[in-house]
Amino acid sequence: MKPFEKCPVCGGELEDKQVEKLIRGGGNTVSIKVAAEVCLHCGERLYTEDVVESFEEIRANLRKHEFSHFRALGQSFTVDENWPNKAIQPTG
Ligand SMILES: [Zn+2]
Image 1 (tube, rainbow, N blue to C red):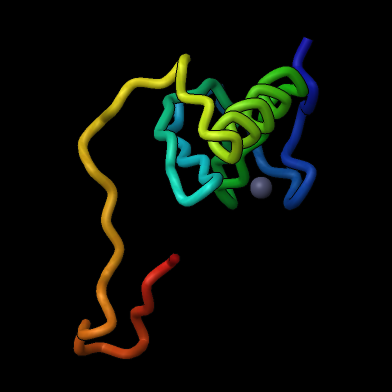
Image 2 (image 1 turned 180 degrees about the horizontal axis):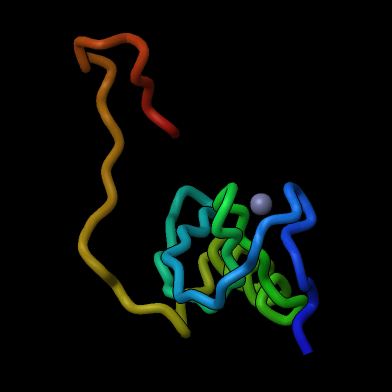
């Protein structure tokens, strides 16, 4: 049973997809692939309730620096204060 038949934002058709999502917490980032329904018209992503709860759990673990279910994947960077285009600013 799908939680939505149509996009709640624009009424567009939804398609089951695997999407990439970044979750941030405590200055760290987790990158995952997750099942979502994606609106073919506006790109809105809809997740099931248990998936949204998992996002919150991941975010809470990041804030607590509890990394036992995570593994390292590359490094994350932000720009430094000398980046020439001032429209681009560091995140933390
Ligand atoms: Zn839509």
